[in-house]
Image 1 (spheres, rainbow, N blue to C red):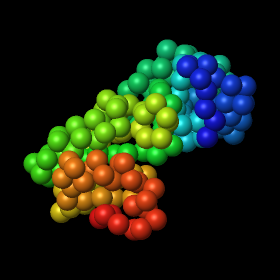
Image 2: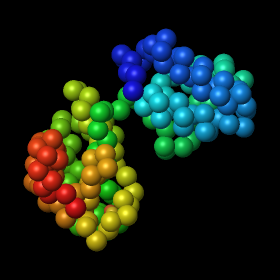
Image 3: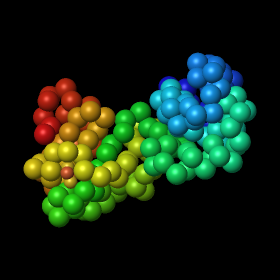
Image 4: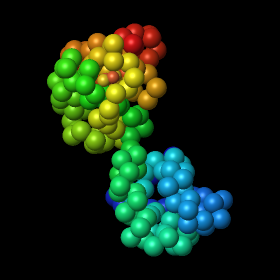
Length: 171
Ligand code: FES
């Protein structure tokens, strides 16, 4: 994934947009798939990238920004190396998801939706992760951890690399 500093974009990132727009033939009806593809490759959609998408696709910039803002799947900030999803669905909420989220944010020094300063984690509140019997649940990339206390959640975040090696604490 390419990364840019403080809102600037690199020529490489712009050329990713150019390639994807060319693949889609600049088709106006393909705006959402185009946004998805660009985000899949760059990780997020900063303003300069959306302006480039508008230029290359022939879709007015206001519409590109409007569509991207409407769908929660699109991000406008760079993401961390790992995505840490904290389930906020009903079952998890009842089982203490709020306290789990607070513990994780406190441990990492970020707000919900934020990315740690070292770029390691982006903390995302999400709806049901599909394993409600394990509530409350978090996922780090593809690894799920369930029946967590806030303290266990802190430990997992703190020792994620080690937990992976040992196969410990996963749901
Ligand atoms: S509500 Fe959290 S996994 Fe379903």
